Length: 392
Ligand code: GLU
Image (cartoon, rainbow, N blue to C red):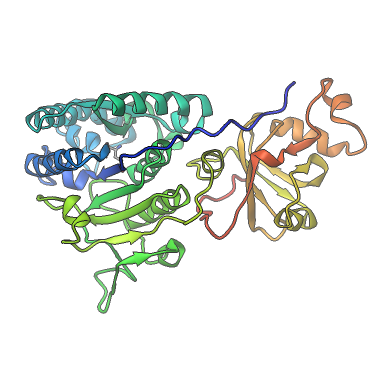
């Protein structure tokens, strides 16, 4: 069986600035009657038309399908079950797109709907399919509007919030800037309702603000926490994130012109390669490995990959080519990588350290559990927000 290869670089030089704008449900739906907020949508699309005239290529990530569909299925934000939300998304998504389409045409451009699931982002082949489609639309001058396909996803298999979805989209298209438009001016050093809360203009390291960023919005699913996680993903991809209030007038150009308060999460100066980003900044991991302390330490010294007999414990049921967390024996996440074997195979091979993989599995395979080209040693750049999957 062949070893899993690292794909060739996908990036090409480009001269038009590319920007992803994320708008949340609280901006798009009137909280009281759960109908589209046409005034906001007009302001947004008129601003996008300005950006397009200036040469920007814009992709929109829009929430709102669940909120706008609740009336149709006779449910409310407070009492909607998972099934109600899935049905509401089916009703609300066409309402949302209809509104976008009509308004965009008024401003002289066309839009397209791109609905994705977690799997479309985490499975390499499907990721590339989505990417190609989005690029084709951009080339045509049609603005893609991306949302999660909430109708077919349940809690365990969904991205969950459109902040991180938007960051994934920004990574996917190599955007320079990600705008997260929300109901607040930006990030504060503590809960903004606390006395003395100080506004933060610029952030290099989002981890210092994670604790202050708890709480969620009433209509959407994200809060400031998911916005900072999204900003970190974007930073790693060399994309600057701007968190700003979604005003009715010039929500984006107002910030670009320097007229409005906002928080800027600055892109890391040496962004990871597209492959490393895809490996590390994932929304869900299939499992995790704990490896011997000395092997983990050696990874920082540039050691290339490790073997099954370096594994101390295996967590989760994963398949060959799944991406895993790698922990040292102290519980620190040291790396993420794409595994050459399934969890069952890993367990068998690591229990028989004196035999070759070929003898155990009956076919020639890499001796390494994770190859160096498929392993990313985590620096300070990455947040490790998701917990390891525990074995049952
Ligand atoms: N995909 C959800 C929707 O369209 C929104 C997720 C979020 O609030 O971030 O309603």
